[in-house]
Amino acid sequence: MPWVVTTWGISLLVVLPVGMVVLQAIFPEDNIWTHLVATTLPRYLSSSILLMVGVAVPSAILGVANAWLVTHYHFPARRIFQWALLLPFAFPTYLLAYLYTDLLEYAGPLQTLLWQWFEWRLKSDYWFPEIRSHGGVMTMFTLTLYPYVYLLACASFLEQSDQPRNLSRLLGCGVWRSFFRVSLPAARPAIAVGVSLVLMETLNDFGTVDYFSVETMTTGIFDTWLNRNNVGGAAQIATLLMGMVLLLVAIEQISRRHQRQYQQCK
Amino acid sequence: MVGFIAGVVGLAAAGVVSAAEEVNIYSYRQPHLVEPMLDMFTVETGIKVNTVYVKKGMVERLKAEGKNSPADLALTVDVSRLVALKRAGLLQTVNSIQLDENIPQNLRDPDGNWFVLTQRARVIMAARERVPEGALTSYEQLSDPDLGYKICMRKGNHAYNISQISSMVSALGREGAKKWLEGVGKNLGRKPQGNDRAQVGGVYSGECDLAIVNTYYFGKMFTGNGGKNPEQIAWAKGVRVIFPNQGDRGAHINVSGVTLLKHAPNRANAIRLMEWLSGDMAQYMYAHENHEFPVKIGVPTSPLVTKYLSGGRFKADSVSLAKIAEYSRVASELVAEVNFGS
Image (cartoon, rainbow over all chains, first blue to last red; front, side, top):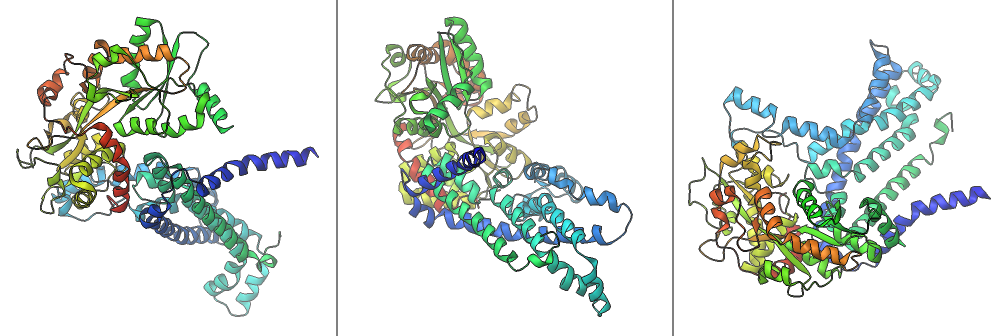
């Protein structure tokens, strides 16, 4: 009985603010939904989706490739790499963003050096990638979030029985073919979980995108709430964002439905 | 319930003690400016001042706290925030002969809900080396496709820019202001980012030729921000301050102000502090510490302002502050509609 009460109590603590937000979204004091839909919301939405794609794909590649290498190959310092590849986890994305901006911005040390070398001075004299951009944000997120995929893929690769892979090699599969047809599909559920965690982090980040002046759902919530003094509009965007996260969870669940037999521990 | 919780949190944050003589402030103004003045007030009156420095969302916070709010006064910058507090029904009327004497009538809310303490203008700071004197005389020119200069500006939705855009709505109408904003967006040298001073930094580094900045930042930069940012002295020296539209409606001005909150628990002390802030001592400190324009007649501007910012003597846009605040909603809609700065 005390367990039931505790569980309900904790659940209520979690659900209450979420419920408040949804209520404020449905019954806003000052409804600007039509203006949001006509102006900013499509931009927030497409920008967030673009970021999700641009972070998910490279994170998955980086995470899986590194996991495969450290679990299946012997090379110098492999043991160090095994845990060192997890370290970016400890790095908040916005801090990395600050560092790279200081380094790469117009008046930063790198571009100043280029001015000296090539006698450039004006922005129009040369082309340099803008760090405060979608590409910049994607790079920062990928560099700090890929360990989610790496960690889960590592565990999955280590758990896998060697037999199917060896069998596939005996039956004539090359290294790549065996990886793509046997090992990778077996690790797919773990990778899917990793990627969906990466995506959730991408969606809920505020610090990095705000610093880079990239509009997303989260900066939209903030802007609508505090600059436009409109809680209702902010709650509406937040509810939509929550829907996107639920969708992610659902996709992840569905993708795993027929995969359970692959993992020994399940 | 939410209000109650928020109230308790606010109370804890305000560091409220049990002393009888005290006053609680929510402030948008920064500690380094406000603290020396409030300390002086405490020395003179024996009233303890507790301050919570709010960065954003004061209206929402006060709304949530409701009757349980420990706050007596709100110190804010920007007229739209003063009016937002009034509109949310969070203020009460103050009748004070002293406030009426110290603050000119056009700088007080007609209903006695808010009072202006200082003024500042939003001006153009132009690169001395690249922009010849007299090349630029109005805000309107900033949207000219043939401007030939790049502009640095902070994010469109910041309160300072919202008020500036509101003043353009008042001068040019909604459509005119929208076209203006689109034009300015096309002349930006970089994505809107950073604070006002960072824009002058952008001019210094050569990323832009023009920066849109509040006047007192010139003083802050010129003095190296009290030794904290010595690099900014060169930024300030590299720009010429242009008060726009001197031939017609005048430069856009904005204000900082004080309001008495509806559920103020220490009403008498709060009014005493309001009066003190409009008095000689505080007005002198505002002018000399932060290089703002004092509202009380007879209080001199800082020597720096006198020398480099014409002592605050310039033609100011006479449109009422209430009007500016009224257009702030349209202004923020325009920023969203033209997708400013992307």
